[in-house]
Length: 283
Image (cartoon, rainbow, N blue to C red; front, side, top):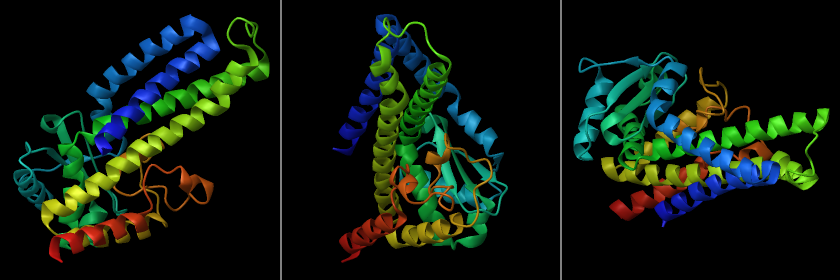
């Protein structure tokens, strides 16, 4: 059901882009949006992993690093190819996975993760990320985030166009098309992105907890990372790549209405689900 929901929401996002084109540029605009959507998917598929690794200044590590050995063990447990392993040089605890497929995946954790968490908690975090690799969540979430960012960019252009005047209102949908593009479309895109990302996070928590047979270790790790995130923002994090992290890196500066549209579920809800999973597994 969760996978079906994700496919539906991604399709809805592509349709939304085409409707923006239709409302703002007629049939020609809809065609341009379709071409843009195809191009975005191609770009995200091939280049999203290298871009995010550079953005976070990740450094590769090999078999001499303990992080590598933990990931290798989890890859064996999940029957996955060994991903590339990276460390992020910051004391802010967080982690993410990236890559277009299990055979082209990378897992990265910050130095802060290794300093703050115990061995079981680190395994829980990395099991969560390996679950994302297993279910190809990274590619899905990155494509959705790219769609949402482009829709917001188009809305911004339309807003400035309205401020300075347009000469083709009658031909391209007039004020209704403009309002849809500026207000409705970005809001709908954000809600869709939120739905996709939260669904995948809950799935990764459950799969990660099962992978190590210790959901409570992951729950403890989430609580610690979330607490730290309320005081320090992860260096390199942006609104475009924040969805990849195990905990929202902007938790400390997001409040009220912004939290309602966060790509991450409330940490308290995630911990509750992991506690329920532990009772299911161990009685």
